[in-house]
Image (tube, rainbow, N blue to C red; front, side, top):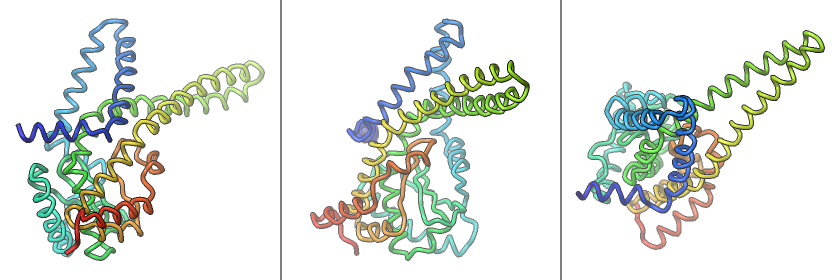
Length: 298
């Protein structure tokens, strides 16, 4: 019961209102798509519910967690020197995190992402992916970043993405189809225009359809950014505060001078980069938290 109450408390934070709103908007759109696909038969709703339930079960299973790591390019650490450096640092941070929140995952897997830019990501419900570039930072700053990512796992920000991600994934799939159709239409319009007058008329019609596809994609992207940006920012602040509480505020602030961290708020992470809090603002907040005694480095 304690764990259930802990999860419910994390899920229904005020900071997650934007995520819930996005989920509801998507869920209002998708039944219409399935309802139309099944010619007005309510079996479309049942089919949608089954897809949603199956995707949740799959995502929470070890296989699903491995698939998320694969999606992010996060692999097992094979180099011995990397293991000897990063794992002890992560274990020290994890011990403090568990003292702060005993109900967080009882183990954390560290995976490596082959990217030169220093960064780290909370993936799934118990994995942190660190880039190869992160190893270029001092140990203390690496621990500050790991503390931030463990904050995401402890506060179950990534669980929220799993629970409410299937709609997002579905809509991205639909948008990808629309984008592919639009690309084909643009190519067809160019070819039709070279035929002659009738070709020009046909080309104009094709361009109109292409424009409708572009409008649908733009509308969905705008809705996604509008609803999710607030939740993304709030989640970052909450993870920063967690890092401060377990004693890594100064180290995190130093690391923020070099990089901007983020979690996988949605499948369109690159679109939401601009929605991440300003590093200077985060550093200022961390300084205020430490002044209030939220955590001290040892």
